[in-house]
Length: 115
Length: 111
Image (spheres, rainbow over the protein chains, first blue to last red):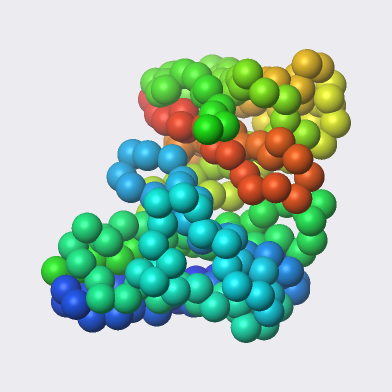
């Protein structure tokens, strides 16, 4: 149980294009999903918290117009990197939890390379 | 901001040896979790701790929630090559709050 998937697993795009990453909870309903970014040899950095049916809460320093998050259903959240630039290249990981008291389970990550 | 101090930063051990790593904080945490991350993958939950003093095992792994609620340790007994990876501690200061992560411990096992 508690399986989280991400799609795509990796993506290469040209600078200036937008990229959408999906995060799905496969066997449970996720009231809250989280989006993280991870640079090589570093820890996970929380970007935003997404609750189903409401606007995402962004961490300080994360541009909400740059990283659009939608949590339209209890099993799906999407992160869209708009007008991507090379500095947006990173490993993006989502996580999901069933309720306030529950543990977060992580997806396998999406590697984004912007050329 | 909130920080977890995780140590050691890296370990290179012989197969069969036991491993110990820990996390400390200047603040009280209500939950402590230990995750393992393989290269190019997302973190996988190893052990979750919810009560001060709690000692929990998962196979060869044992973790404890410190009695002061400001620290936690993870032990791996009789290490094997597949234990290689990065281990992260994480915690929440309040139930339902976001996770705070340690910097990670890189474990390498020599067979």
